[in-house]
Length: 116
Image (cartoon, rainbow, N blue to C red):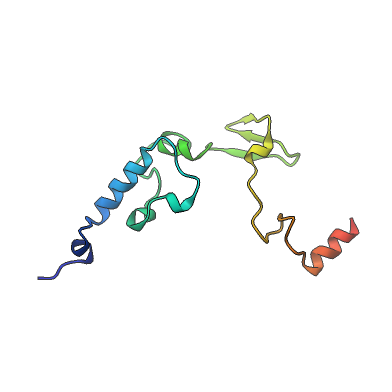
């Protein structure tokens, strides 16, 4: 008789992963640190995948607003309404990326910067 690795570890496989994700979705607050999110097979499941509600409603409402629109003038609209402080919807720059003030500039970026 052969046993799967799931049976050997006592893991129920896909159903255990779904149950872990359901329990995670039921939490009042979600962690901002990705290392605190489910691990194992549950990390491969989509958050809120069993819900019929559109994004921004039901479990996915805990992830943030359903629509965030950015205007060329710097305005930010959330769910069709302009927000008072657009900075609240701006993320930190990616280290080493083009918006990182600490990143070294490439020669082309340096030339473009000097022309201003």
